Image (cartoon, rainbow, N blue to C red):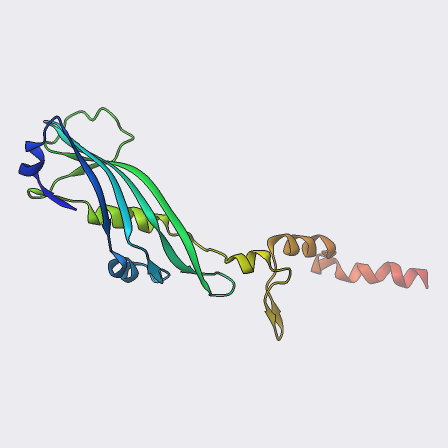
Length: 179
């Protein structure tokens, strides 16, 4: 996934089609400890070259294997990313589209692997759940502990009568008067 600027300039005003599979499992596992495995990433797209910039339209497909947040079992999490990456051949004074991300070229080679790695790292979710954990009617529990859902926590808070500790003595006041 590396091309020299000279190679790409020869393709000026034409498209270069990309359809490759890359394996970057080891480098992503070093950068993110939750990634247990990664399928080969299918990279499909095209590269357009003109005098000022090189534009890469990419589609990334594959899957992560991540731990379930409740059971720590392996969960297969699909990856589908579409992106447009622009490399500036010459520094531009005015950038037409402020929403697009621009990359300056260091040296005379364009390498898409570091960009693909960053895009994939952004796709790793905070937590995933296996189908078994999603469909389970009871949550894990043990001696003196149990996992609660957010709804269960909110329900417990509503059921509990909250008494200001400074006024706790007044709660007994009315029960003494009734006797």
